Image 1 (cartoon, rainbow, N blue to C red):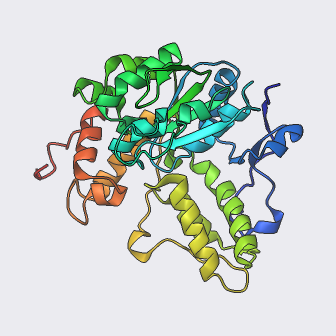
Image 2: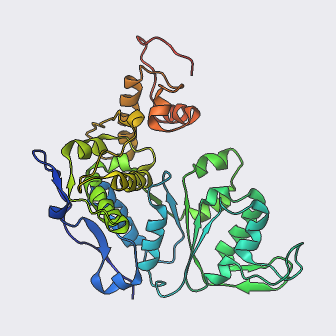
Image 3: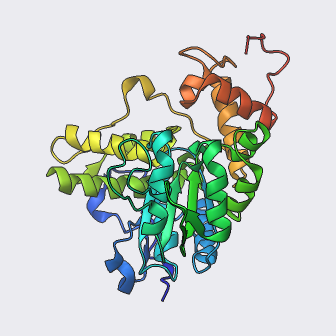
Length: 357
């Protein structure tokens, strides 16, 4: 039977008049019903509207066999959402097999996915079972699916449509029952337009798209995430934290977080290591403590991104490149920022001195 996601409790509110007391913080974790916690699903922390909308999508699609395409920036937790979809599905008793397509050399990826027979190529000294076979009756998570080479995409399309394939070096057709959840931080639609990604494969993967919000779009979850990671690393490192100074929490809440939750997690680990007397120091590097507070009346990710980019551009006097430019402050490439500006309709005001893009 499939599990159902439920909200455990409210997130802690930041105390504006005194230090943030870790021991007084209420739980803010989104977890599975108690009887399913034994399956080991990592908990998803937060209560923001953006996170609630995301988990509503997970609830809707998890019980089906539909292919899911998870889109989101690096560090937003795409693997956690893939695990949630699997654990809340009727396939939860089957395997969840994970493949990072960007981490496997291109000439070995076909063998990794579909397997090979002994002697299929130089170095194939034994038969190998591929990830699709290993995921039979379960779920296959294809992370960074945008990195799959175009030459391999027809074979992936076939197994998605027909649930059949051949191992390298074999003419025998293997049939599987696999649900695919794919993820990428790349713009696959743009890759289709530039002929880097097959349109038919994109449409087959994009049956049910899920967009993960960046951390800057769910800033109200930051205190709960900080508390969660402080508790985890305090126990792991053996340096429990009892207090988070108000100025530290304020800095963490207003930082732009280009690396999203992964960056927050790593900085909290650093802060716990550097802590003294149970007090968490500000873990932000001194050259990154210039913070940006996003003020937007809209809850849409597009308008939150637009508000953030505009604020950073104004802070940088509309300079895009260079170490003091907006791209560096946002932690993105100059060309990426220019693309986002064009896509969001952001143009330099006429009364601002022109600078070369």
